[in-house]
Image (cartoon, rainbow, N blue to C red; front, side, top):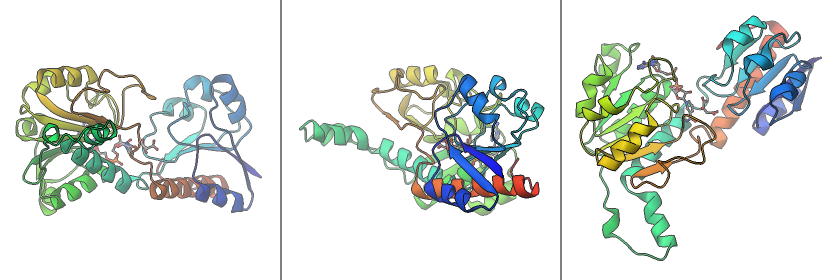
Length: 312
Ligand code: NAD
Ligand code: MLT
């Protein structure tokens, strides 16, 4: 019997597949950390997680039985890959299952921020009919800058073009020809697009190159009244620079789904005019969670039963 531990909430469809897999048994044990997590992992052949559990070196070092961890989602930043490799643990992810939901969330934030949806509804809840206060901004005809034109960035571009926005993008791995076919104007550096964009959205992983990609100097060369969205990873925009930019009036709007520290329930950004935030909900749809769970179970069972590695 291959034993699998499920470390974060996983959709029922994924659990049903695990239950039906011949030669497999599983346990759901969420909320584990530290010594309890390490002790639990030592008793299983494979693990499935989302972003909640933190698989740090002290948890992974020296594990003898564990062979693979699959992340039901894209970012594997909660798993120390070097420590996993040292322990002989293969790390895989499900790169495509939540692409469309996250792109839709990006567009949701962009539109809702532009039309003051959250504060306008709040004003009604507080008994005010305040039409003048919530003048918005139309997105058609505006320029959207996209940094990172991978799965989600391209899906956002497609949707923004359908909203009649002009799309400028930067991604070192996309060719000019492909961008042109898609209707995206590709530039050679992030800085080259910044003076022209009315909206900016980022869809890269958080790396040494993308950390603080947008900070005070980058904001200085942007238009006054720019609006920024981040549904990728916290830290790509410098959060202190966002506060400063909102206070000075340089930035008209900030919409964030992700934060430097998560969970994040206390930020100077929360409650500032022009700010709209959600608690890392990009992939939180029934459809995306079913897809990533089903794919994660397939990857893990294939690896443990047949040694097949995909998306490592
Ligand atoms: P992807 O790998 O398909 O695309 C990432 C793109 O970023 C690639 O095309 C890559 O070339 C580009 N890139 C890397 N470094 C860059 C740089 N310095 N400058 C410009 N481009 C750069 O990944 P994806 O599925 O599109 O995911 C994008 C991000 O969204 C990831 O950080 C992922 O973890 C995050 N994500 C968040 C949610 C959420 O719930 N908010 C859901 C899914 C994914
Ligand atoms: C991801 O990287 O897939 C997202 O952050 C969504 C999630 O947390 O599952």
